Amino acid sequence: MNKKEKSEKVLQIIKEHKSSSNKDLILAMDYLQEDFEFTKKLVLKGTEQLDRLELTYNTILKEYQKRIKPNDNR
Image (tube, rainbow, N blue to C red; front, side):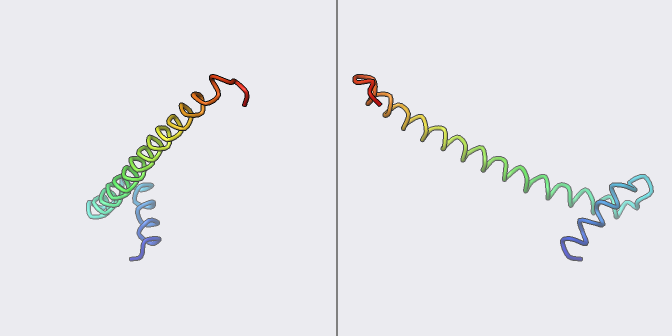
């Protein structure tokens, strides 16, 4: 089963979870767990990138502010 077919199957299982077999519920839970872990990793990487970006911006801002403070002539 390819990724798209598996995704469609899981969506169907979610919609019909009350009548799905235990085997199907396990398939859906495994799929959701994998997707959760993948998404969590992306969010953490994005957060780390935002932190680095903020630190870099603040470093540049401080330098800029030091330079314009004495003259205040941008």
